[in-house]
Amino acid sequence: MQPIKIATAQFENHSNDKSYNLHTIRTLSEQAKIQGAQVIAFHECSITGYSFARQLDRQQLFDIAEFIPDGESVQALITIAKDLDIVILAGLFEKTNDGTLYKAHVCVDKSGLVAKYRKLHPFINPHLTPGNEYGVFDLLGWKCGILICYDNNIIEKIAIAW
Image (cartoon, rainbow, N blue to C red; front, side, top):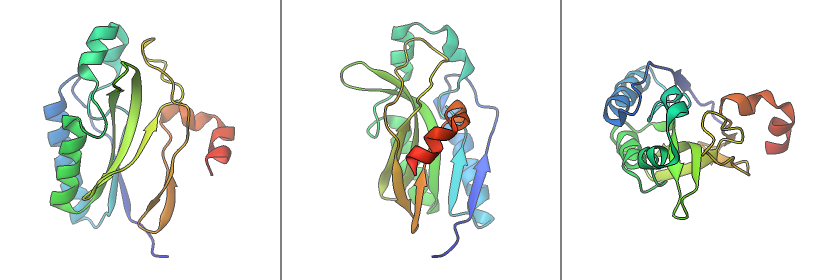
């Protein structure tokens, strides 16, 4: 099994400015690729912004959230992944056809959505629904999973996921 070179990136995202944030994700992904990274992982809600969502009502949050994988932001991530031949992990608010809202993190590559994780403890806004499953997926020959922020603090979850 070959090692994976993974870059991590955190930047000062702009609240509810997906265009700016996706541009920054592209720029940082380019830099990571130049430095030999095969994968780049961004922080929680890197696409949408995070703390501003505390004040949003249900409709405002719904308007910001996107369908996964068909929403514009995930499709933009897939385009970046194709253009740069790099795997990207990034976060955003997700909505479903039945109106449920989640805080999600996705993994995409040049072929599309590889994995999606819904945060189990999404306490920033009362209109977010907790996720209810772990995802283990294959990535470049490795078994991988996603946990978001506070979810990493519960050690039992890490053991259960693997």
